[in-house]
Image (cartoon, rainbow, N blue to C red; front, side, top):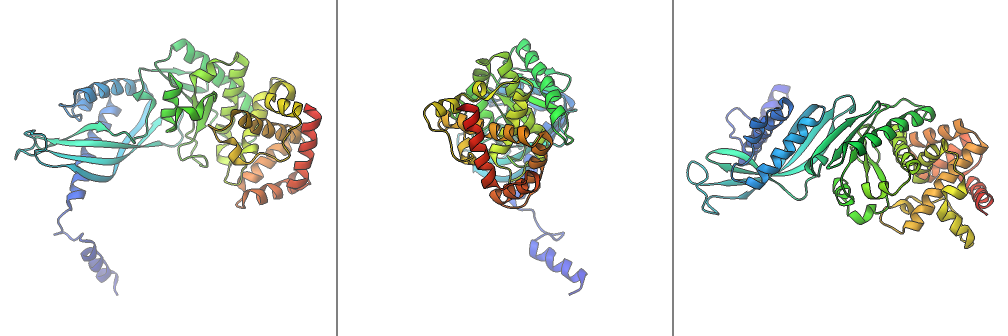
Length: 413
């Protein structure tokens, strides 16, 4: 079949010839895309009137909320803000509530999946993306955004008045937080970047973005998880595309309740720990065990403070006193938030002591080389770790585990 004939056949099969009528769904998708294009242009241009012109004039509560959102967005150093409409679904038809609606007395409603992409100036190397579920209403022949649906990704700028503090190597965004608290956080973030940069052997952006919500509940909302999952967790780092990604669009999200209970030194350890995850993201792969990634983060976090095992490994100290020290390196499942807090503590402490052992007996360069080798492996986790240990440390994973077990007993016994 000739290329020209193939093109004709394809056009007919797809209904995309010059005379084809667009489907109702594609027409509606195009209509709401135009609404969001106008809204995005208003965000980029700082035009409140144009922004609110895209919002349903009869949804007063939603309009008020969107006015606050726009005020917050104006405070952000945005260099990109776009929407892309995905799936659309018609959910309302003519005259369901007596509204005079469109030109023929009807009103239509649509729900749509929308991909938001944005970048912060100087901080995001690639766009950050989020999924929103939006409702649109047609009134008088015009479409408006009328609601954000419950299963949307939630954003900090929807949670209260945003304050922006820029440090030397950090950007801190707070919602309903004092500027003083955010400045203190920026100072710790700047120090964390310097501490991590001294240890991490590969290039990275050398900047961090910190989000500071006003409560544990709001933190969990940003992370799309139950608040109970993060009780006692001072901060977490999340990447744009999930745990394993080459997109350096990480955010350090702080739990104000757990973070606020820490000493100044403890807060610095936490921020440095999370900054390690930002730096190491592109060299952390599916084969990297959590005991290694979390252990390295703690090793760098504690490194400049000279804290010994009996100070920093309280849960393992208790386990030693009870004669119940672990016999195996922690599995990834042992690091799940929301589980037994004592067991979670033992998992983190075990990973830290494993990395401390490697640095003490083989040297810091070998610890970093091991991390990089495991992170680049395409093998399954145990095989990747075993191979990397053979290459960098000269012993198998099983032999290392025996050495680690003896080390823990010696340090804590």
